[in-house]
Image (tube, rainbow, N blue to C red; front, side, top):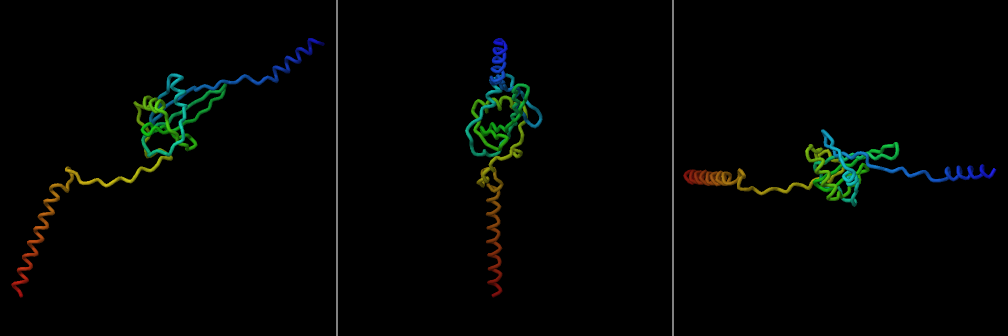
Length: 174
């Protein structure tokens, strides 16, 4: 009987104990352009790509890459991603939140995305509008200088010449 009580107590403790924690690991991390993806080979690089930064205002649109993450938790896999804009050191999460990317994360995105074409800036969702372009003054290579000035002076001279001829003709008639 005593043996049965000990076995029952051991079974109760085993069932009451919390289950062992299942470790989460970054199974895969990729930096993708519109035509291909490049995987991060080592664990440290994959972990660095997971680092989020402080929230920030949406940057002005620039070419970007999609970073795709696959996490393994036991038998389950979870996937998500974010848009990485290395030129602006910014990342846009799936929920639309913009974050500042660390210099390390920016460097990894540039390195892995280096040989592939990024997505065009026009397709970046949630970016700020670019500022209005400022008018550019005519430079030395402008068609208004010096040829345009010479043409304007000839036109003014011709107008005075025509006016003078008209005034002489009006004076003769009077």
